[in-house]
Image 1 (cartoon, rainbow, N blue to C red):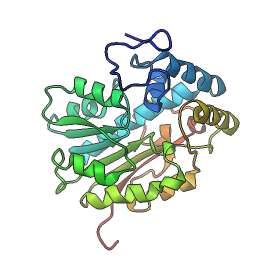
Image 2 (image 1 turned 180 degrees about the horizontal axis):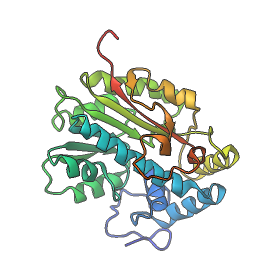
Image 3 (image 1 turned 135 degrees about the horizontal axis):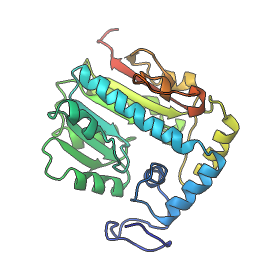
Amino acid sequence: MRVTERGERPAWAGPEIDVDRPSAARVYDVHLGGSHNFQVDRDAAAQITAAMPELPDILRANRSFLRRAVRYLVGQGVTQFLDLGSGIPTVGNVHEIAWQIDPDCRIVYVDIDPIAVAHSNAILQGAFNANAVLGDLRDPDRILADVKDLLDFSRPIAVLMVAVLHFIPDSDDPKGVIRRYLDAVPEGSYLAISHASLDGSAPERAEAATERFRNRVTDFSMRTRAEITALFDDVELVDPGVVYLTEWRPDEGDDIGDPKRMSQFAGLGRKKQAGN
């Protein structure tokens, strides 16, 4: 059930949810064709898309990057995933992708939006090796404490920060936040990032969409390709490095179109050995 008018509350939205204020997770859900959003989220999504009509395609390409990255990681023997800023569940979640290859993979979703967490746990009910926890990724100590009994920190963990770091301003030190998570995971762990950028084919439209997002939803920090690449300083990048979404290890037969149209970069890196 959707909220059809501002202020109405469906059964799945508890009293703590503000149905009159859009959230990043729910606006993203709108763009992906999901149903767990409110009228205020759909209004915001429509205004943002009016400024940048290609945005839904970009977000779907981002989801495809996540799918390819998870498949690559399981192929490398990684069976644990910490998905930070996981959002509202849609088709193609990490557990769906990973379990198709290895049903023993363990996944922990983390999001600041209580609706995202509630629906993740509803989907995962009865699953012994997947959970969702409520938390702000900018508080690594709190998050790591909450997941320490859910993941085995003696074995490699994939830390996923997919389409989330552009919500973290420089004043919150995103690079330092990343380093704290990497310090907690062992050698052989991985870091996956996708991030919005103005270094695309339509910077004017991207900037207009960004301003509308800031005004309607929350802070949003575009970064250059060089700045996004610098977020991987503590890991060894996997080929092809930091590239546009559709350029990162496309599946055979994929039509990558004009990569610059994506206006998002993506990359995957492996934690360096101590002293390297």
